[in-house]
Image (cartoon, rainbow, N blue to C red; front, top):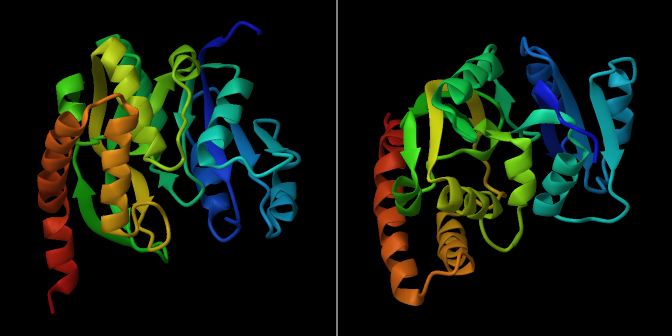
Length: 259
């Protein structure tokens, strides 16, 4: 495999039937003032994603590839990581987007802290793309113990060393594949950092894995089990997750329900 390019970021966007919003994600990545490439991996979309991607045919920083068969989001992200030529990988889901300056701030932070992974705070937006003003903050110094209690990291906020992403590829689409990866990374490296600014604009969804809180809860318990935890430890971690989750979203749902 070719040597990775220092101080270069490979943005990995898994894509499936996302033509209404993926251009906003791609454009927000291209607007970051750092050397980068944007790798869009199409997981056999049935909409006109190939047609939409023709608008980027003259943009050398955008690489578009299409899976031969549907692989699921974990393996689709892994394929993007395998194609990456940058020292760092940044994950971005097709229905989210970044604020200007996200990657420069993260690169400064991850170098300063000598960490292998860096996230950011996120601002929630409605399924139709309206920003809510509700921000989920993040601790600027994260430990493995923090991550056991709750998944503090939004996948689309992550900047990670490419070598580490390849060391711990995502797996188990029947769980929270991103949280499982973070746990494995933190088990080895023990520490991560974050920029506590809402640089990720995160779209709420009624159809994704986190759309149904009960379904998401089942996936979280399964994540702990896949991480090798026994039933008791998995239940203890899950209890912390449930309590934190209620606290995390209470203000948002109270605000939405207010007259």
